[in-house]
Image (cartoon, rainbow, N blue to C red; front, side):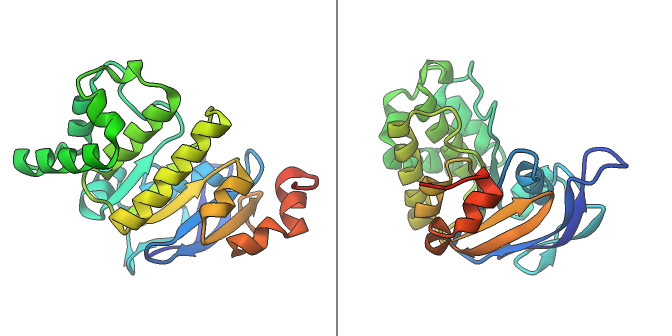
Length: 239
């Protein structure tokens, strides 16, 4: 479904953040990216999404080379959704308006049908439909951000730390929503996450990154008990 082959990328000409990154996610998999701050997780998502163009290597979506396709084209033509870690909703717009922005290139009838579907799946959106997104809690905003990204029915969904700043209870609710999205939308999910154990519990596979490349990969549940994960990710034991 998604393949990254030996990607090299960075923000300045003389500094590579990704150093030969290679990974893949199959159709309808949930794959988590773990690793310490600065290891290249978010940079990898931005490279896949098209915010950054790789200096070397390729990004393939369903076998098609999309390495040079900009983000706005990937969202529309390649059916890719991206939820950044911060500023992922328009706080001054209503829930309705946020969803309409997510489906801005759908025709009016398609957009309304999709909004109705998502409000049915996530009742909090219907409950606060005409309220400003600023009135929502952190967990509710994350649900809105996910729903907005789902408006055009993506095949691949990129999530950058969806549990950031959430309480443990709300964190679990967001992870449950991610599982629900995979089941209902039949979408592949590639997720950067700092809450390693909770992310691994809902994932099929995971990659642990270090210094811009893959240090460890495997079945998510097996990695939950692998001492190398704690050494690479936390520098200590994972409970």
